[in-house]
Length: 197
Image 1 (cartoon, rainbow, N blue to C red):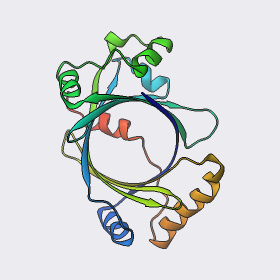
Image 2 (cartoon, rainbow, N blue to C red):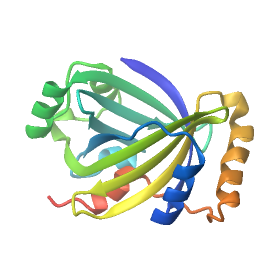
Image 3 (cartoon, rainbow, N blue to C red):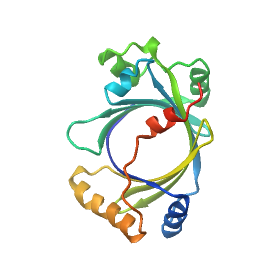
């Protein structure tokens, strides 16, 4: 189990803007991750500003709970339990979450009935990463259950003390590429909107 404070600045992109930023930095080779998002039919997690997902990589997987903090607009607490790929695939097939880790314990503390959780969304993301002095720059090309696609740029930072400076870098990146600062709907919400149940 890992727990971390995450500070993120995000912006939606067009495909052309995505390609332009991709050319400007030394990104790693892309990798694919598939996210299955969970909530209750009454949307209890959404009401509590909580995100819950099982994420599958090529050879590993993880279950992550994201909790909003009231301290800062772009700040989240993430609790992650590592899973084997086989475990995660079985859980997704059974429409269940992993019951024996820190994420399930936190859900129980938050009075969420785990048996009420179900898959509510799916997103398959091709992700590019570039480590910069300002933080981890991420470019995502995401495909949803209905085959809709979108593009997103994110700067993730760990150093709270440098949040203002790093936000300035992110806004300059957008401005230098004539990219408008677009409000970003949470990826969970986007995945739910495009989910075929």
